[in-house]
Image 1 (cartoon, rainbow, N blue to C red):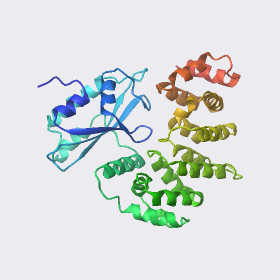
Image 2 (image 1 turned 135 degrees about the horizontal axis):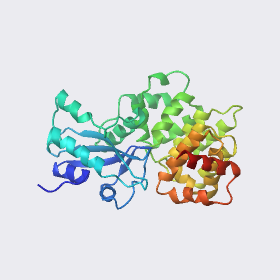
Image 3 (image 1 turned 90 degrees about the horizontal axis):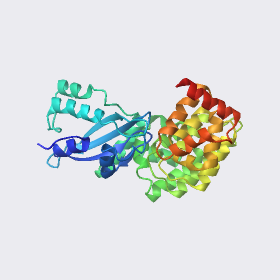
Image 4 (image 1 turned 180 degrees about the vertical axis):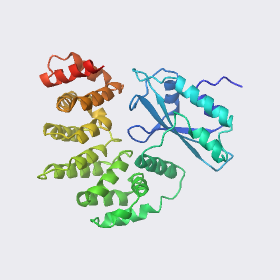
Length: 342
């Protein structure tokens, strides 16, 4: 038998067809060839969260109808490189329990042994719904029973009716934004949606590329919320998070600048750091973000700053702020407390 050193080798040796998803900050495909380079420690993991890679592994065998999902988290080092001991230990545990026959029915005792290890996790409900929606559409399955109910509600959104809508329906809808009728429906409804269904919709949009018309509708709703006498901080944060899978543009950057110029809430700062961190490659936005972050309690500043440093695309710019002579006294003090805590 060929020596098995990586998860890719393991799944290949087991004669499965498989695909990978990142489940950390949103749900997105992870290219298999890129993952091989990650396993070889040739490149850092692109989307770390809490210094881990959070993976969804979808696999099946061509001769069987059943499909399987593993949810795995593996530790990364300070440079974002995969620590290979984790995947190797996981594979040892699986081989000990199943051998190299990864598919087929499991009895309860075997399933419990397989799940009882430090490398598995249960995704949040919204992420699980988004992954199922993506796989269902890919496999040409019908959307969930909640989908039509959501479409009907969006025709005339109000305070009643949304309570029976399931998150899976929102996720199925987000996967079908390219349908012209759906796009027109959601753009028209955006201004009138109550906060609770709006938040659910935004969670699902995090993992979908947004057409320009919907980006415009979201920006309009953001502006409307900003103009309220008492803007709802959670709604502002959810609306920002909805852009997570969509490349940055000038209109969005300008909107984030206006949001940060007022007193931003912790929820908004987390939404930007956790979902819209690519936007922080824009120097003025990063500077303003860090200045506002410095106004937060020390544990919050330390946590968010540490997360930003782990992101490969952002790391050089964030570290450069440590040496910047232009940072404010407040930011200098916050950074000083960060180092004193370590």
